[in-house]
Image (cartoon, rainbow, N blue to C red; front, top):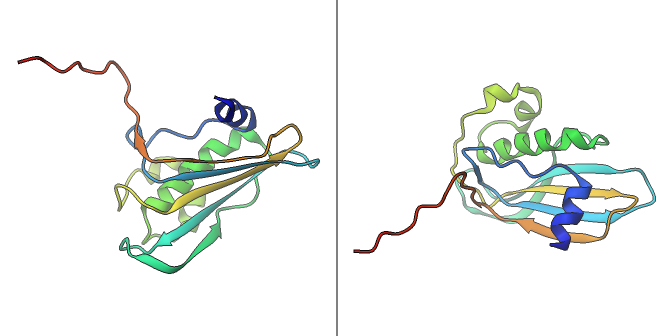
Length: 145
């Protein structure tokens, strides 16, 4: 529970859109700093557009650093769309309206959205939020036959 509390204090929640599913990993590096709060978002690419492992993974910064916490959730959503549409230039996902970003080429990806969050009052912590289904409503109970 400690990491959830720290994460909630550090920024807004990870978006659970895209049909109520996170479809790529989100890596979160929280670190204490004497500087003001900031978040840097990048894309960590480990596979190419065909899902083939890259010989050397690499990172691409996804927009400028964010200094206003409420802006983080939208940027994460945009980064998720960029990961799931590898044949589209990432700049499009930073500039286009969110309404125009509904489609996706991939259902899931091994490539990650990376968050580096630092600031005063933040504990040092690293965790990965893995893709999975988020259901709303009641779970159905199995029937006995």
